[in-house]
Image 1: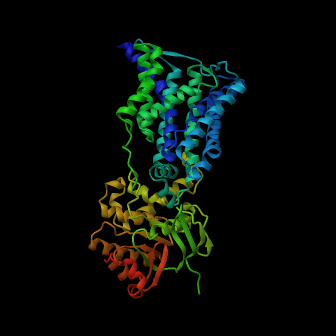
Image 2: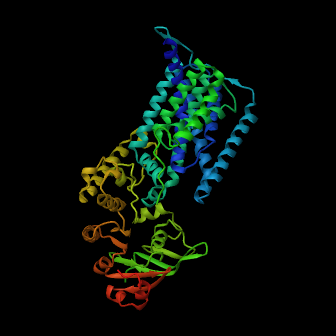
Image 3: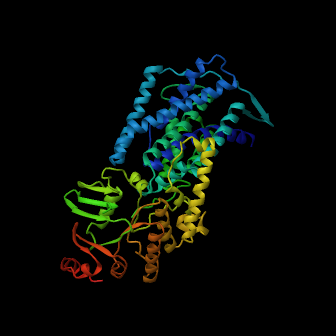
Length: 299
Length: 254
C-alpha cells in the first residue's frame, strides 16, 4: 500500500508536466485543427534557455535566480511559439491549405529545431545545475521531495491561471469561439490571426516552463529531449480528448500515473510501450478521448 | 444625393468552372429593407458571402460607406458594421448565451491586461457585461444568460443569433433566411421584430427570403437573382409582374 502511494506521488509530477505540454497541443488543435509536432521541441528550447540563463547567473540557488530561469525560459519559448506560427503556419493557414501540408511543416520545424540544438549544444547530454537544492520530506514512510512539490503545485497554479484566461477574458472567449466555428467568429469581428498567435504564445509558455521542470527533475538535458515527452504529451492530449483543455489536464495526469505504476510494478522498460499502447487503444475504442465531444459534422 | 451604404459593382464569383455570380451591380441606401429572391442555387448566399468577406470575388468591387472593402478580411468588415446570420444556426453552442453576445464586442485591450487585471480591463469588462445584458433583455433572452446556447429552444436560438449580430452594432445586417424552420406565425412576428429593430438601431437590412408572402409584404424593394444574374429589381408589384422572374419561378410556384 505504501509503495502504491509512493508511486502515485512520483507519478503526479510527471503527470503535471505531461499535462502542461498537452495543453499546448490541444489548444493549437482547437483553433487550427493542427497537431503541432514542433511543440515538443519548444519544450526542449525552454530547458536549454533555462540552462544558459542558470549558467550565467552568479548565485544560482537564490529564489530570484530560480524565478529568472523560469521567466526567461517562458519568455523565449513564447517568442519561439509566436515565430513558429507566423513563419511556419500562417501563410498556409491563410490559403486554406490542406491539413497535411501544415503537418509536414510541423515535422520540418521540429527537425529544424532539433538539429539546430545538436549544432549548438552537441548531442551529449548536459547536466542541469541544481538551482533548487533537493530536500526530502517524510510522511510516514512515504518520501517526497521539494522539487516534486514545487512541480505539482506550480502545474496546478498554471492550470488555474489558464482556466481564468480561457473562461474569463475576451481573448479566451475568442479562442473558444474560433475553436468551435472559426469562420463564424471572423464574421463576428474576431481577429483570428491574433487569436492564433495568442494560442501559440500561451501553449509555448507552458511548454517552456515544463522544459525547465523536466531539466530540474531529470536532471539531464539534450537537444532530442523534446521528442519523447512531446509524443507522450500528444498521447495525453488524445487520451483526454484532443481540443479539450480539461481533457489535456486529465490525460496528462492519467498517463503520468500509469507510466509510473507500470515502471514500479512491471518493468521500467515497459514505460514507453505503455504510452503508445494507450494511444492505440484510445484510437480504437474511444477516439474522441475521455472528455472529448463526439465529432460533429458541420452542415 | 447621399452615397449609398453598400455598393456592389460588376461582381463576379467563380467556383472552378461554375460562375456563381456574374456581373452583379446594385446598391443599398441607408435604412433600406431590401429583399432578395431567387430559386435554389441562384447565388444568393454566395452574394452574402462575398459581401461579408467569406468569399473573395474574381472581379468587381464592393464599397461600404464609400470605402473599397473588396480585399478586407471578414473580421474587419464585421468591425466596419457588416453583420450576417446564416440559414442554419451558427451559434457557439458550447459558449454561454452571454458569451455569444459578448464575443461580438471585440478585443480592444493588450493581451497582458487581463492577467494583470488592469483597471481599464475591469472597467471594459463591466461595460461589456452591461451592454450585453441590455441587448439580451431587449430580446427577452436575459434569463438564459449563463446557459449554453444549445440549451435554448429553436425559436429562441434564432432570436439569439439576431441579437448576437446586433452586438456588433452593425449598420448593415445580412439575414440569410431568418424565418427558415419557423411556423408562419413565428415568421411573421420575427419579421415584425426586425422591422422595429431597423427603426430602433437605424439598421439597413438585406434579406434572403423564400417565403413570398413575407418578401412581398415587407420589402419595399426586391432583387431577383437567377443563375448568378440579376433578372429583376423593383417594388413587389414590379417583381410580381416581371416576365423573367415569373419564368425563373415557373414550376416552383409558392
